[in-house]
Picture 1 (cartoon, rainbow, N blue to C red):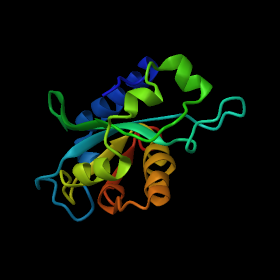
Picture 2: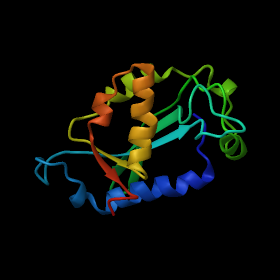
Picture 3: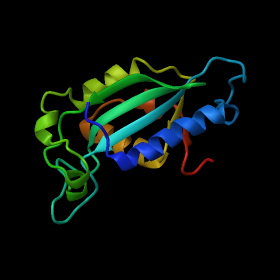
Length: 167
């Protein structure tokens, strides 16, 4: 899996740290505080936002990788990570800040397979922690699922926690 741009690490690790330090505020509705639930930190990478000089293809914010970590008292453990096949062009910002190219993604599994594999690992009581939940869940994953005609309802149905909005 390609590494995300260094600046994105700051927000991602802050998401994990916040999830671990404030689990009482993340208990899903209807789940007793002592019940078993997991805090999952989601990290996505895309081919970039619209760029009139060098537009991302097949469309903007197409996911190029996804990683999910389980937040633990001591940090995090990788639950799932995969590059995603399908981006045919990265926008100018992504090309400047990432070494990943469309050729690097050719051997990766397609979005539908990645979502199937990831959804098999999820539990209904999981809480999905994102630095920017609206972007990761809606702009990237829900949009891709709709465009690619993929059922991602288990992932998108998890209780969200946004470290931009919620803290």
